[in-house]
Amino acid sequence: MKRIISLLILAFLMDASFLYAQHRVTLEDMMEQVKQVYPVSFVYDASIRLDIPYTGKRPDMVSLESALETLFHHTNIKWEIDGSHVILKKLLTYTLSGYVYQDNGETVVNATVWDMTSNVGTLTNEHGFYSLTLSEGRHKIRFSHIGSGEHLEDVTLGGNKSKNITLKSDYQLNEVVVTADLNSPLHTTQTGKVSLTAKDFVNGNNFMSSPDVVKKLQGLSGVAGGTELISGLYVHGGNNDENLFLLDGTSLYQVNHAGGLFSAFNTDIIKNIDFYKSGFPARYGGRLSSVVDVRTNDGNMKEYHGSFTLGLLEGRIQFEGPIVKDRTSFNVAMRRTWMDLLTAPAIAIMNTSRRNKQNVRYAFHDINAKVTHVFSEKSRADISLYSGNDLFKFRHKEYLFDPEPTNIDKFNLQWGNFTASANWKYIFSHNMFVNITGVYTHNRSRFDYLSEERLGYIEGTKGGIVKEQNNHSTINDFGYRMEFDYRPNSWNHIRFGSNYIRHLFVPQNYYASSG
Image (tube, rainbow, N blue to C red; front, side, top):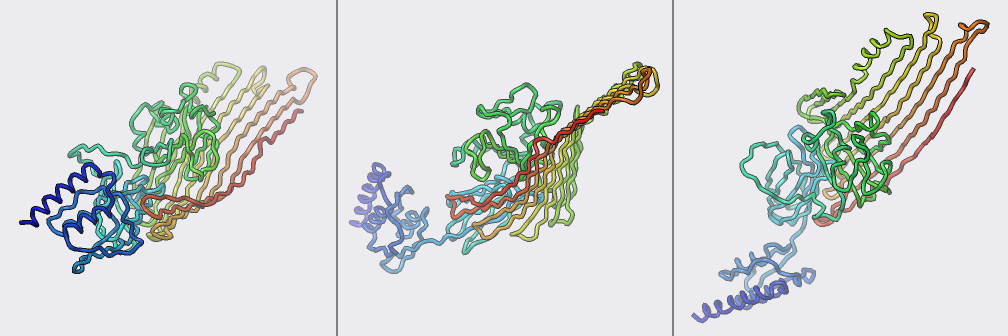
């Protein structure tokens, strides 16, 4: 009877102290309260910290086991009862790592990996790799990504473990649950970052029925588009030429077509876009305005897929599939305007009724190609190619007295990019991921003009006057990028590496002649 009364009094005192001084209670204080009820002593190593704040539930004193289970539930301490002693030991920590895939073999960027047991989590990086350090024992892990489904996995950690997960899309909507985004800047030290996927370009207003990357970014806060309908990007007051555009790790110097009506990114092959408006990570180098990091799809590892889209001013075709099932895949996408196909018949009709013949042609294209190979669970590589080109031609012929033209003027303007990158991704350990990239970028601009005036039709003269002008400029970049992704625990993320780029810049190669 006395023991029951003392337990009730002690429980009341514990409730009062817990309610009024919860923010000051430490784990060691709660252990002292357990010792007042049960005649036990705690034995532990001095490296175990007990002065940490206690924020858990009030221990249930019905039994010693129940009290200890509640007391050490959310700590990295395991306990064991040995007679009148409670032996405390540190829980060892191990790392769970691997890749998160879609059901077609495509890696998932920014997928959430959440331990429902300890309430800690992480995100997959831009290559689909994750690393999560947890205490030993059993854990229930939830892998999820918007549009790619959810997967629950029971994991028992007794050592470092690799686990590749495939998310299967589930479009059944049973209930609506509103949750926080782990990729939100509110939960990270990274500021000014916005991530977009291919699904973000399905809805919204698209110019001439064509989804456009730059115009989508223009709708974000802190970004201005400049001239109406033009794909300019003015971020936080910066100029349009102060933005860094990357396509699979390679720089793009010319990102617009048709004078800015279209951007150079084909949304059919885009996997993820990381847009940094401020707080640029050091791995991108020094930038004044913004960083747009575009990653493309690897290609379906399971089966063949393709799409064909015809817009008002351009057409797109995309095809992907396995070369070797579950080992090697390809993905090819091409976009081209067909405005020149419309203007050619109209100009031909106009030239039939006049002596001055004119021919005007404009066209642009984008070609993306990517081949991915999986060597093992730890090693994979890919090669990515891109070609984009704008072409504008003008030809004028003047006929006076003869079937042969008297004056001929030719004007030819071309500009565009060619990029190539080779990536090797390797998991050195459960905490260490590395991506080594070799890059090549070629940017060109070419202007050619030819004027020919024939004098043979004027009495007493022979020959003609020919004027020719050529102006070419090129940029060639060669380099490599070595990026290490190290996650020592669930709360720290360290990136380090090296970056080397050699610029070969020819601003102007000019030639002119007349005679």
